[in-house]
Length: 107
Image 1 (cartoon, rainbow, N blue to C red):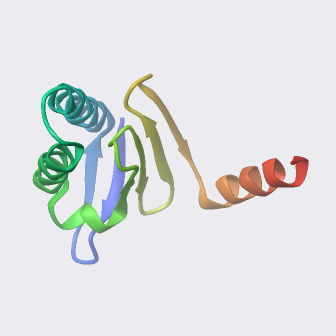
Image 2 (image 1 turned 180 degrees about the vertical axis):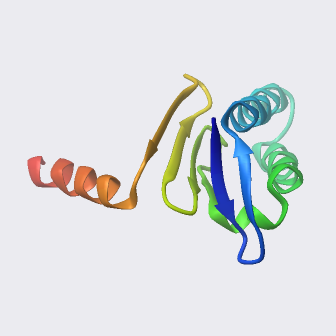
Image 3 (image 1 turned 90 degrees about the vertical axis):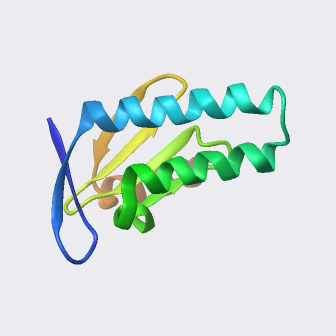
């Protein structure tokens, strides 16, 4: 299964299994790093790995400071991923906005 992303020049089909494997690996190396170094250094290393992995698509990749949670903005959908639990969801912006507002309205 693939996920289509576009950097504004060329649309690319990325294999979802490859994305999962890469992001899981970055998170694993980050966790190993923070056991012996400052988080800032480990984040810099992880950010460099993300840039290597996504290149010009990087502006379409959102992640938390500990590189666990990711949102990849694709051509027609979002890929949401948790690298610790290996949970992945393909969804639309509309579904995410409706879910967030539904949650907020319950609070």
